[in-house]
Length: 229
Length: 229
DNA sequence: TTCTATTTATAAAATTTTAATAAAAGTTTA
DNA sequence: TAAACTTTTATTAAAATTTTATAAATAGAA
Image (cartoon, rainbow over all chains, first blue to last red; front, side, top):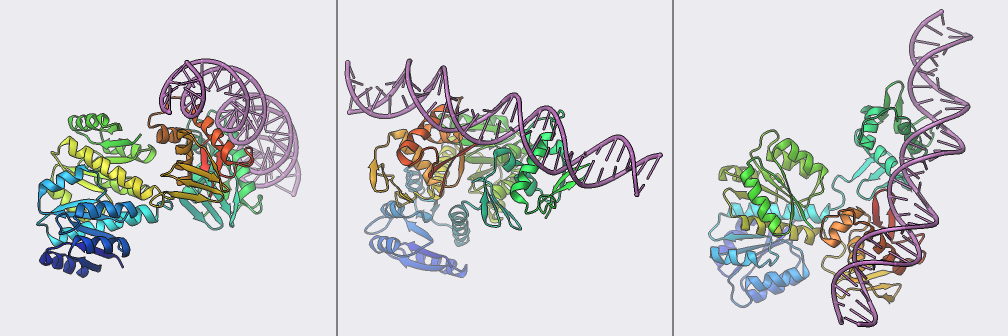
């Protein structure tokens, strides 16, 4: 459940925003002035802040800065004046979005969802974006360039790693040695295809339990190799 | 140095955007159709994408989806029609921003900067808000720019510190020397990559017990370096 | 089946590529 | 200007890749 803090002194607006957001399944808290808003923002555990720019006490501007000193939580700034928005946008305050009143509640909800989704995308899965291939006991981390067989890490050279990753990334597809050479070595094969065989052997030595009965890279006689899946 | 890819078929617009972004210190590449754009986006190393919605070949919509399958890089979608924007915004395509043509180049630059800053903020990993990185016996205070190995403080020069902090802040990720150079030296590497090697050596001398068997910064032969975690 | 030609596996040597190191030259900073 | 730092260059060392030679497996034909 995502928790949202609205810092807004106009109660009708705050209530309207709150209602719509709650209908969309968010947990919402409202603070009516700057002091309370700032305190709540820093001590509470929120996933997103909606800050009005004009507030009694501490203004939205100041709250935004203070939050950014401590958190990366998404912040949406709201103001009645288009000019203010333009001004603060230029200040590089670290807010994530700016909306001019009046706005439709559904647009607010849409933006809130978009910011929460992005935040999760960037913080949660920063590493695991497609960067890990896992097939049976084999695990390949493509950005770290590390390989594990049944939990045990094995060292791979550049070409070995590239070749294995390419094959594992296209399982069940049969590639000729020419195709593999072109793919990994980035050039036309002019007979120098033996090196593919040698690298396949090296990879198998590290990956397979029994080299003569490969579970991962299969030999297709007279054709090429295929990564079994 | 941040690298930006513009996928836009109208050359005058693309050139205008490119000029403004370059004036702001970005490195910009333009692709004029969907095919080229998609290929470049997936293979190249970019920090942000600007995609036109209407393109010959593969449309911006499709490119956005394909990029999101593989990367979390910020995407700004551009369209001449306000209606299209509203439509795709609702689709949850994973784009980070939407702009309607015509727009002022300075607004484009402002948004680009904002998105890059947020991306860094959210993915800057281990460092983020804490300001202190602590991994095994190594402690780095990023605001004070001080480094301790097993409790003993060591003096680091600017470049050494930046390089170590970047690597330690993105543990397990393998970076090429080109990438490291771009990151720390803020410019395109034109062969002057040897300096990265030398700095790695200097850092290891201070950080490692046994330089020839590094516990922190590992060499990935033929690829680059990785901070072990 | 047996023989032969073809293809792949294996092992080891030779070559090439890449990084570590040391030291000099250049640059910046106090 | 001197000291500290950075970059470049040259040399050495290490590692990875490719080549070569030989063995083994497979498929096809007699």
